[in-house]
Amino acid sequence: MLAQLEQAKAEFTAAGLQVVAVAMGQPKHAAQFCGSLAPSLRCLAHEDAAPYYAYGLSQANMGQLMGINVVKEGMEAATQGFVPGQVIGDPRMMPGTFIVDTQGIIVWRYYGKDVSDHPTNAELLRVGSSVTA
Image: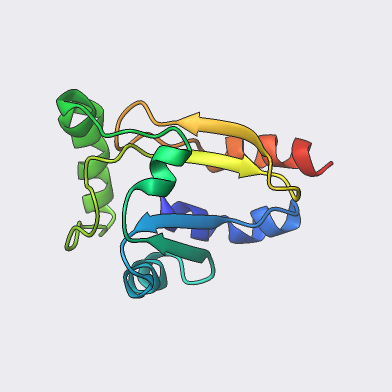
């Protein structure tokens, strides 16, 4: 997901959007992880799952963690050279994507159906552009 966001950085900037990634771990972990996959994105870290729960996210069940879509996406990522590294934080935490306006209000949310599920950049650009217009 981070690599795809990095690849579309110019499109997000042109649309007036700023991408921020949030991960579990220490700031040094976020800097290392984002530095290798998305060096131009702002990455934040928190040492526990509190921000995830605050945004309504939860832990994955076994199907959401190891289902066919997760295996398929993992294999596709591996063929592109992306392999998992050391796990920092809770690997069972479900993903979510949020568009927050300049007032700090969540104006759009996407809750992953499994740990590999994320909205497309096109969808983020479409929704984000309507917020900034």
